[in-house]
Length: 169
Length: 116
Picture 1 (cartoon, helix red, strand yellow):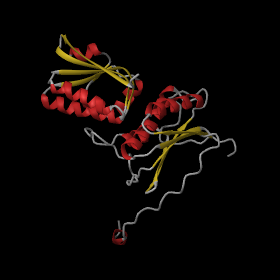
Picture 2: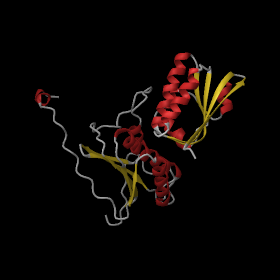
Picture 3: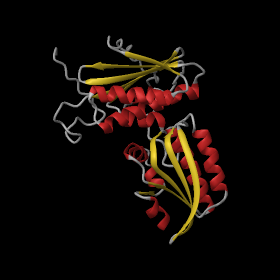
Picture 4: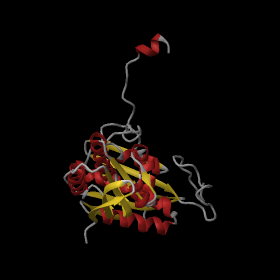
């Protein structure tokens, strides 16, 4: 590192671009305390989309963790939106909470931590997680690639890398 | 029907006396307070071994995990052992991802957990 770089002021990284709108076929559900209903809805949609049982349960865990944050950190309802995109299933959770840390959930909590595992788990089990948060609220989008028929879990793309399969590309 | 049902029993095995807590249903942030009260009460009796049977637990979120980790910490301090038994796949995966399975023993069956 040169002295010049070192002297450069630390700047807040630019805000990420806004998320594109959900698909036209989106299913919407408003929740407050009934997280079991949220999980049942995600599991049903995941099965319809063709996610394997393990990955369907991963998505259920991720959405439930994010929806639990609505209960913990806000006094209002949250909205779950689920839709299909080319080659993937997307679940979006929106609420009035604010997540100030742009790296929330990207650092592994200490081994004996008794907090902070929720968003970490979300990032571990989903193929892609997009987070947008400001003083008006938080949107978290969780993407799961839908396996091609004939691919088993061992052949699917590694978690953390989103593969878009699009006929129009 | 309650989302989470619990029961407590005590028993004796080759490994000595133990307390068995059975969780059934779904454990999440909406019932982690009740779970904490239950585990606090059982841990407060200072058993040598406390086994939590997870075989009927379909779902566990991080707030339920935190309650278990807190109980584990207290058991440690008291010189006891907290063990988990027979988690289903989704719960076992969650214990692995959070490395909770490195902090406390996880057994395939209650019999194995109480034999130690």
